Structure formats: structure tokens, C-alpha cells
Image (tube, rainbow, N blue to C red; front, side, top):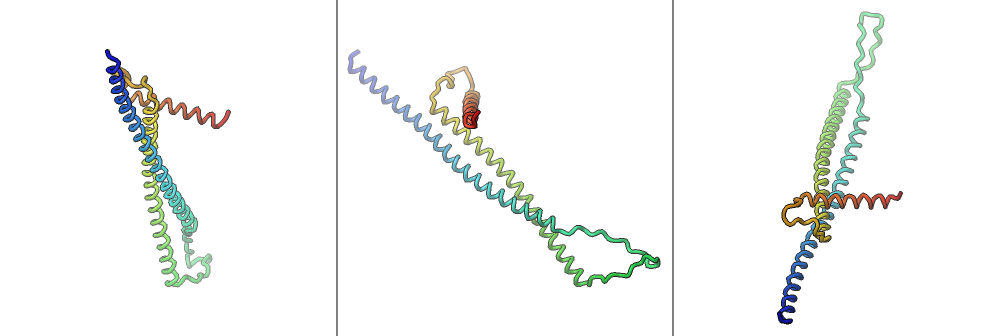
Length: 192
């Protein structure tokens, strides 16, 4: 085989290899970009969740304060029989206007209490839903980060060429390796 043909073949292989390497790098960059984007969205989501949690706590504190300020129902005293000696002189009964004002105020407080409780309950349910969504974002981010690491490492032992480990098992192996690395890094960080 002439030397020029060998060089031409090497040049063609080099171009093909460069193209494949470029595509692999592009895939890795796309996954890395997606992970960074998701990380930024997750951070904004956590901030919004924190704001809603603070709002819920304020409402909860208002509800507790309102509950503490509500007058306890006063038990009715048994009226003594007017024919007995235990009959006490009657105290001045409140006027009808005072009774109506007190009843209206109690009704307004009760309505405010019920409305506040309803708002606290609804916001609590929404916070639960948001917490679930935040957990889903965290799982998606970990998956993207693990995929990026898989692409960057180029560990051929994890890629099967036929019968072997299914891809989901391979990803679990990678995730287990990464979680062990994170655990060890945390132990080193925390000290002995």
C-alpha cells in the first residue's frame, strides 16, 4: 500500500474521529447546560417556596393570635328560683343595642377566624404540592448531573455491546457511585 494512501486513510479517520468527538462534546455540553438551567430554575422555585412558607407562617401566627384573643364562651349561670331566699338582686342587664353590637362583633370575629383558617388550610395544601414539585425538580437535576458525569467520564465498561446490564441498571450503578462520593466528601468535610 503506497504511503499516500495510508496518509489519506489516516486523515479520513482523523476527520471522522474529530466529528464524533465533537458530537460527544456537544451532547455533554447540552446535558450540562440543561442541568445548569434546571439548577437555576430550582433555586428560584426554592426562593418562591420560601416566600410562600413565610406567608403561611404569618397567617398561622395571625390565626393563633386571633384564637387566643377570642373570648371563651361564658357558661350560663343557673337562675335562682325567685321564690327562694337565694334570689340575688338582679344586676343591670345590658341594653339591646349593646347586646346587638356585641353579637355583631362576635360574628365578625368568627367570620374573620373562619376565613383565616380557610386561607391557612388552602395555603398549606398548596405548599404541600409545591414541596412535591420541588422534590421532582431535585430528582430531575440529579439525573441530569449523573448523565453529564456519565458522558464526561467516557467509561466504556458501563456501556454494553449486546447482552449485559440494561441501561437503567447502568445508571443506578453510576448514581450509587456518585452518592458514595458525595457521602465520602461530606465525611471529609465534617472532619473526623
